[in-house]
Length: 411
Image (cartoon, rainbow, N blue to C red; front, side):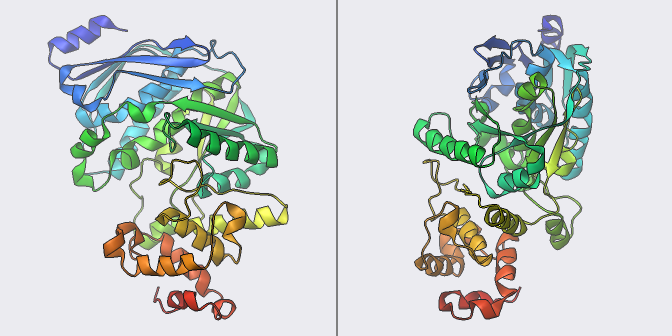
């Protein structure tokens, strides 16, 4: 750590975040952070880790300026919003230069927020490593977006990269076992390598406090600022070690969403104008699938599975910590309805579905004030795209009385 700069800035009463050199142990990287008192409330703890739990390669040769990127990516937004200085010893030159563009694009996305802060690096290193342009890794949760991205790039044989600590909390061992079993089955079904990474990155920051600092933008910290660069950064170490030239991250929104909302960019921490500018050494990131709506992705997944005789468990649920779909929450119901709209059986894709669920969905979307905003069919476009798909072939569905209400909608 550049202690001189740290204590010099501290003497000037500047907000400071100092990150020590990563400690390597058993293919894990451990980080320690120091902050000035005025930033303490934004951190739940001052240490963090990222552990490659099924990787046999020795990662000890990965240089400091690369292995620091996961923790740095997690705290950069804190620096920007709180006008704080981050102090580190070493960083990859390409990533250092990409930060400026990422920060500027966040400013375009959230014009009501002033993105300040600065990064002080004692040693900026040009890690001009040879990366293989034909090697890919893809972040994979088992959901619609990430499953589509893998299938959309199946010819590239991407390495599946899943994070225990993202959707599944790190203290949920049984849930992770179930989820990892689903991912293992998918990797076998499609003959793909996989990487499991355990990380406490979602337990480092005090999200409740940070949400209070950005209340004016009508978004939350995780969705608006954190999740894109934080998730991507988890692939940096493995990609560097294995000379992987491309990292894929699935889109959440689509070009059609832009058109329907009449905007040039949708505020979101994972966006083409953020993810595609995340670079390190000679590796690039690709925000994949932005030209497809969620419903179109569902259709492509089902078509591929049927045409190639593949079993696919689409794991979408965030409500259940079991690692499986609950088949009751709004996200499960949207997904089941989306599968049904493609004239396919949701039971074949990881759900427990019967026609009584259609009546439950009708009850909830027509009384969304009682069940919550996510059941409101006028909020967000995913409902609309599902209903449009049904309405494309009203003749096919005319015998389904519990779907009649969908055809009465004016979209």
